[in-house]
Length: 106
Image (cartoon, rainbow, N blue to C red; front, side):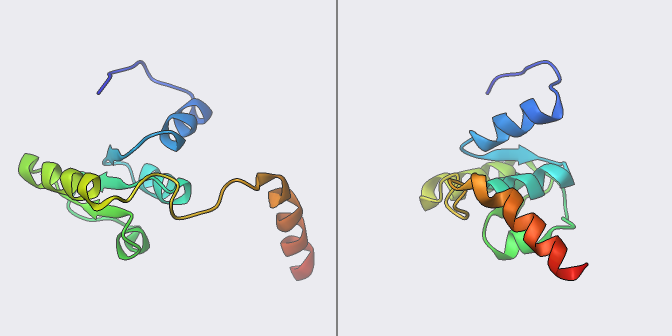
């Protein structure tokens, strides 16, 4: 673990994208981890993003040290690795898909 100075949003997303696992109490970071296909341990008692837990990409561990370590170890031992949930390799079509989606409802 490395402690760093605060980062811009885009720099933080880049770090998240290349992380093996994310430990956070941030609701936004939980969802970003899910979108990026990075396992997440949530260090609070609940999450507003229950779909991330249901999909197996987020474990709500609370603030208890042993629960956090247990959730961390479960991910590390499960073989679930970053970027396993979504194929993000074809980003070039993303803007085209968004435009098609938006124009279909306008």
